[in-house]
Length: 439
Image 1 (tube, rainbow, N blue to C red):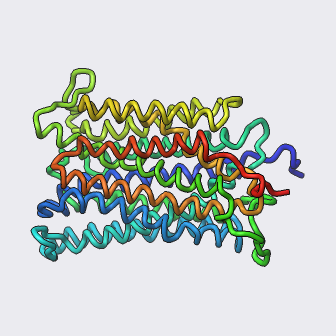
Image 2 (spheres, one colour; image 1 turned 90 degrees about the vertical axis):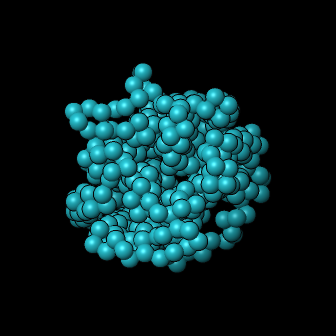
Image 3 (tube, one colour; image 1 turned 30 degrees about the vertical axis):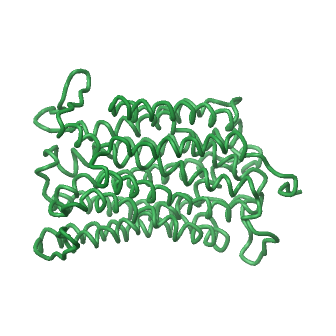
């Protein structure tokens, strides 16, 4: 019989692996922005950047609208059934991507007009798929975050466990850009991509997720005591009455806003710089053509940015004595400086380096926000996940500003704003008021 003091690592590993899948698919959604800009949105006129970033907006709208849905399911049916429902949304989203690609390939003239933009109907189907994929990610994360933070794995603290899990998640986000470039589009230069190239890899992804659902349904993921309210148990107070949690929700809104905006828009900024005669070099090279495949500097930028998350989370998973608050203060200050340097010098590598600093911020903010919430934890996680909608807001705002300014350069001021908000939470907002201390 399993000892309570030495729980099995298997449930922790299962949850972590599923989080890897979600990270992989989330970044694929972001990385499809640039290819779709050159295919579906080739005739989008003055709305091209705005419509391109609308893909991320719809993805993260799934978090806003359905984040609390996941927490209700956790309280009603438990962690395992909720994660299976989340993966069901993944299948639905991938099917919409497949349908969008098929319709755009077979009926290229099926379009409608908005001002000077000609928009394919397949683009609208893709937006629906993006929304469903975001809903999937939201529901799964409602399970992952409280489960990992509360799972009594011997010799670890909550922020450390979160860093371990998010490090594995980062392997997915790091590999996704090259999956899009090399597997989906076979190394073809981005301006010559054909939409039908999505059909086969999307079919393989659908088959893979169906297999994961089947395997997960046959495994045992136990519920954790005192982390969720029972289906008939009533919570005595509103989750919004905990000040440190509410301020943490605001901090995560700004965090995800800048995290996603950099990952999704840095390659669009790269194309702008290259088109204006500012070559982007990597060890003196301006291209990454290997064995006849154009891997693309744009893919490298995104890969190294998300790779910074992997490295940073792997390192911070060993920080057994450094508090979440201290980590958050140091990383936000350094990220603010890098964002300023990136704008002044027009150097994308400073933006790439922010990935290393962003790596532990989610874990830090989350662990600080749920301290002492006990049976309110799962409900808090659902609200917390809804704040991921910041990724939609700031990505779209930045795209709109780029169209308005005619350049991406100074739009990175949004990153500076976001970092300063998180710094304020680490300095002041994290404190638990006496009325919020539960017995």
